[in-house]
Length: 358
Image (cartoon, rainbow, N blue to C red; front, side, top):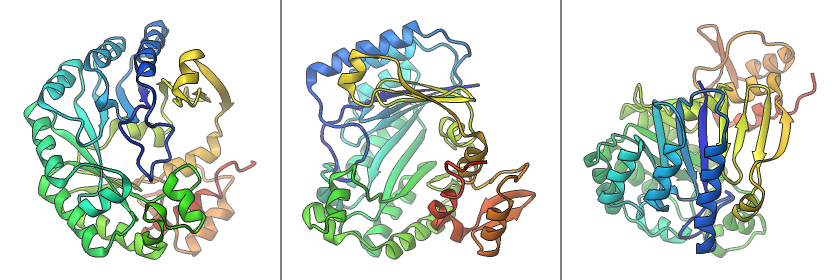
């Protein structure tokens, strides 16, 4: 069964570390965008019944609840999971009950940090107490499947402040958490400043790679003690609370994307829509379509999962043998998977499979 992804690229502010195609966009564009997505959903010739729905952003929790309900009403089926990404500060009780009535049963909170000083450097305006209150609202409204995101490597982050954020995750008792190591690239303001050797946005206070790796390993340890096992490089959950939708990406199961900068996969072909919201409104539909690299994808997507992969290892036997010798890969219960060290060097491993010519 396939999944549905809908992009909502509008935000109240653009965070310094964000490298997504989202941001503060003209207000008048929001209603036009919502209508364009609705038309696309209503005109879809559903060849399968969706099993999961995922609303990503941007900040979909900031959208009009009526528009959200119309989007979801246009999607057939009784979904096992319907996730909405939410920014702390954009949640209230009335919204939560409307989301639940529309079919949302899982919320992913982009917390990133529970430490006020770190949040201010990145442009975030919430507090740990605000997150706790909003999680209580979600539970009151019947949404128990809740995830929180953390980023290791924020400007000014220390071992002590990282422990404080991890302590909050444990205290709140959420059944799912995502831990991302800071990405440094040209697509975010912070990334550009770091690459330029500058100091704006706290760029000079970003922990080095070794320190970030230590923070990640500490998160793995503490989350495991709290009952959240790592099932994918960046994702941890209690049994039964894994993200059913995101597992489709790593297991190469079909999904259909709607809205701007949305990707789709039908099992053989990958496609994407226009990157910007304005361009999407003007030219809905696919702007690029490419044949999927089935052989390479099976390795660099499947190896993200703690369960690893099984089956034919050709044509990468030599590469795999090298990584086995170097302690980056291992066999466990007949499956090939990353070692703990391999997780930290996963980009190096995946590079051998991405775009490989076989």
